[in-house]
Amino acid sequence: MIPYGRQSISEADIEEVVRTLRSDFLTTGPAVAAFEQDLAAVCKAEHAVVVSSCTAALHLALAAHDIGAGKRVMTSPITFVASANAAAFVGAIPDFVDVSEEFPNLAPESLEAHWKEDIGAVIAVDYAGSPVDIESISATAHARGAIVIEDACHALGSEAVRKDGSLEKVGSRQGADVTCFSFHPVKTITSGEGGALLTNDPDIAERVRRLRSHGIVRDPAAFSGPSLQERANPWYHEMQELGWNYRLSDLQCALGRSQLRRLEEFVDRRLQIVESYNAAFSTHPFVRPLCKLQATRTSWHLYVVRIDFPAVGRTRAQVMEQLRQRGVGSQVHYIPVHLQPWYRESFGYTDGKCPAAERFYADALSLPLYPEMTDRDVEHVITSLLEILVA
Ligand SMILES: *Cc1c(COP(=O)(O)O)cnc(C)c1O
View (tube, rainbow, N blue to C red):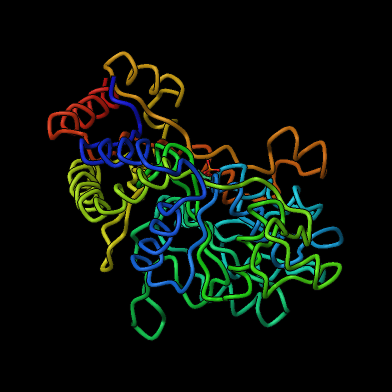
């Protein structure tokens, strides 16, 4: 079975984890800062803070900016539920802006048109790895005092073009106050589970570090507690605010760091596969490939096609089943989040709230895309889908 996505683990990756297992630290050790430094360098960001998942990173991004009750957090519905759930964790209202018709990234003009007074943050997702228009989104949000969080779970390694033609790395784009990544095994690089928050703001980085470990401070310069005498004690530390245990272990950091060295190799292979798929599908009357090769380097995480299922005379479920019978896994990314039962029940969201997202959901299909796919695997996926669509 060819799955829609999977990790690639090398002997070198395994070596790094084993070396860490034999070292003094399994957590809170030197592998954490080493991974953070490498991530910041690759993404050209000032600060990287690694955490236990991207869900944790999104949660801390909001918490560190004091976004909570009384605030609204906007995201797009074509995303994994975590992008919206983070708002609910902090007591804010998760709300949704529709996506653009041509590509399911948040539509800046919809955000501008439907702006609400209580919006405190916008979580903009780089769907499938394609950088969202953060420049327009941040122009709208920053002018009204809201922060912008880039959910770049799909886009580690992608580059974006600014309106003035200059390039910027996802992870340090000017419009984003913070950028969040995931290292879940289906993502571009993996640490098993894991995530990171990148920012150029030193105060936010420091607060996120504190919040990922219970709000505890160990730096004497930052102490504010009882008496100078008490503070001088060797065991002394302070819990200054309520935090969580969102740490990433040294084992995970060792794996993540080793994987990060392979990032360009992974992106190259993903781009090759996207090119083969596009060559095979772009002339098909009922198939519309979404992942166009772009002038900049795009780290495609998903390969998504939109299929005219009524014209094909088959439902999407039937096509997926026929693919499965040929050993080809496929998936749908995503059920629009506002239509999930919990969102309908908690916030009264209904069908028709985000029409472009709902249209996209009706005909999208993700095909297998991961670096270890062989050329034969790619050919097999192509011939399988083309056969099914004529049969
Ligand atoms: C995977 C993913 C997340 C959640 O990442 P975890 O590390 O699993 O918590 C959030 N947003 C998007 C867009 C994702 O793809």
